[in-house]
Image (cartoon, rainbow over all chains, first blue to last red; front, side, top):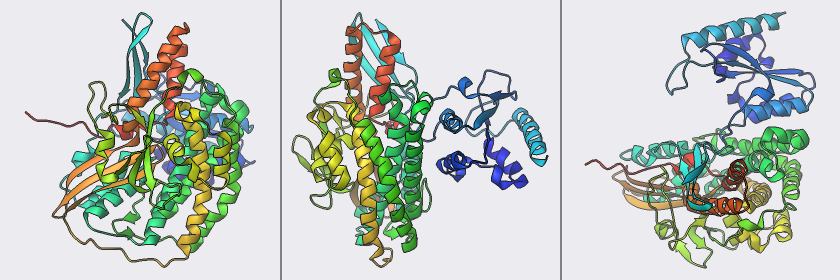
Length: 125
Length: 429
């Protein structure tokens, strides 16, 4: 879902958008070192016991996640960003299902479109 | 009887859980459960071309992807009677060392450090130790870059092929890798100097066995070999790997188990350092001399330190490899000499000795046996978990403290749970 968000909005300004396929370490190290960056927003599906499609703006202290060597935990990345004096937020969408081989549900698509619309308008200001 | 259960083992790759069964204050049984379902790689590749096998098996894992690829290449090239030239071997060694940097940096700096520093998680650690996390990320990024330059992708690169490489990196690309090492060595040293003076619990000390490959370059520390060194002094040809592993199935886990002489054993950085440590050179040797002790042969927590030293070793090795590689001409891909044969390939993956044993008949895979380091370590992990649980119970510790300590011990092995669940035999009746 996060990839879809980036792909849909990247055209507005490629410098503002990064997706995990570019190499997470590179992106985070670049963000940490870049003094012009003040706020970092992550967009991802999150399970916060809400109805599918509900959107939440989450702070670091409300995130609980397990860690895998396949990816560096989001909470750690947010914490690192904040130690550099920047702000980090997570915009989460409650998924409909986490089953393999399921595409993004219609409910989540609608919520994603709302986020894209809001962020798109912010960037065009 | 009651149970203490760690429902989800955090900060490891894959899905695992720990169950400790208690009768009163006695530990009756410890199970390290691998919750990944059987992934059936050894069955998927049967009947396929060797080149297809080579692309499939690295998908066992995204972290040790090149270890799987390299072990597979070594096994397949034995089956097909292919002897690759020195430049190909050196370049494959380079990618393996890059993977070691990537994997060890991630584990030591991001996954193990919270345990070693006494933090509940990595996030809490960023308060005072953010700089070490950033160094870990920088080192990991470099390891990924090495892997990408050699194999064409940071993960699941397809450039190493049977008989050689699809494309050899340019000398400029290789020199760029060499040039970066200078700035990274102090970062690796800082991790060793942070972890080195730390005290680890004596109550966990218990003798065990170790195994690793005897490097092909004699008397040198290395990650590729054709024979297995065991801590009891035995040396086995890699084709006799089953004399080490003696695999069996257990009811509580999708991962098979290994024992040597009926006892658990450990592979990985701690095994390599214990068996080959005297062969280290440079700064890695200096730190090994300064910090190693007999306790490294008894206490799995020292695996974190062994990884930190190996990270430095790999960084120091990379420029040496680059200098040799750039001086050689790019060889052509070596074609197979036959389409039927058998052979076992082995490499030292970041987590330990990895075996890929194959038979090829008329150009198709007819037998596949893959034994991963984490699968070999599971018996020893369970044993040390039992020691941990009993000690904590005897001390009157509460369940939360016991669970936390169990996780610390399991994590010290840097287990790759996904790798370990590669097959349960399916028998149709």
